[in-house]
Image (cartoon, rainbow, N blue to C red):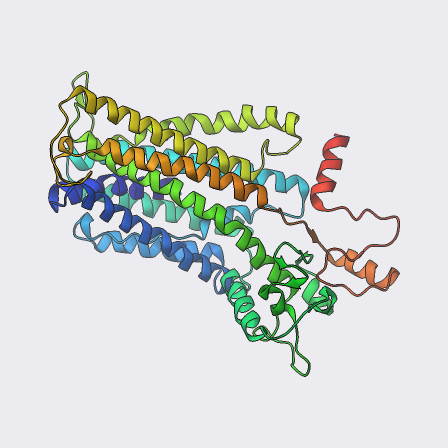
Length: 465
């Protein structure tokens, strides 16, 4: 991903200038077209994720999309014809190398993603400095050839490690499981359910020996009546069980978890909107700035290197200093929870937009106010626009987004699932005679045996250490 990101980020940073200077788009049109392109590229990750979950392994999916990317770059006669194919298979492939059921290995997953982000950041830094400089001062074809070479080298590196990877066997796609719950729930909307024990839970050994089980929750209930989602776990009389006829309690709870996450995901949408426009408008502002330092001219497309450098420095500090100190205070193995980390990002996004608005406001005060009646971002003359008003608008929305995020983060409930292995399942059926089910509330272990969740066991181990 480091090598692949060299070309992708370099093209992303240069694209807004291409639309502005070569295609002669106006100020806002070039930024909007760039973000539309990037949004389309990132949406393709859903295709890669679906294929890797349901049909191919994540490794093979990553290699397939990587080969397509290299071929597209190789057959392109100019970088404006580039069609970036971004695969979402390599991210979870790294997480597959850790056993989530092992508390010791599970603690290292967060560390892996921290270093994974650092490598992506390093690749992006090389892209917006070296590749952008070569493209601007030597030629677009040379910069494009460097991007293609880096993508090809990254593909070869991943392929060489294929014999050593832990590969997850393709199974059922989460998108299909989500769709099944919605379809079955609509089909059963006339059915009334007053007892959660009536919800469908398979009893066969094969279906429960390799999965995680989520107990039924009451968060989405209206009074004493379950919401429509619970009806997806009802098997009507005389109907044979099937994927599109009835869903398990775990499937329904997975949809509920996703529903609880949607407001948080929407909060991140606004945060990324601010980041996208800062990355495009800052590059455009660089075209009218004095970018010479000691006789060296810095390309405007290299301006995004500033936050990338800070990220490269802060990620090791976070991993080696921030996490150990906070983990002793909070007792959390990662220092702070996932929601708290996202909240920090939302707050920093609001602060960055506020600072940007103040900086632009100072520029407005120092020059004569324009009497133009055009819009904030109209035309191609940046000094006649009111970029500070646009930044203030995003800053206000970001501050409101912080309050919105805090509200939904407090409402969010973490799932408490209990992984059940084969030995525990057999012991439970032999000693207690209880049929295995998807409900985590059912005791599936013999008496005097620890039945705590993975989180509780991890806390006990940490306490012993």
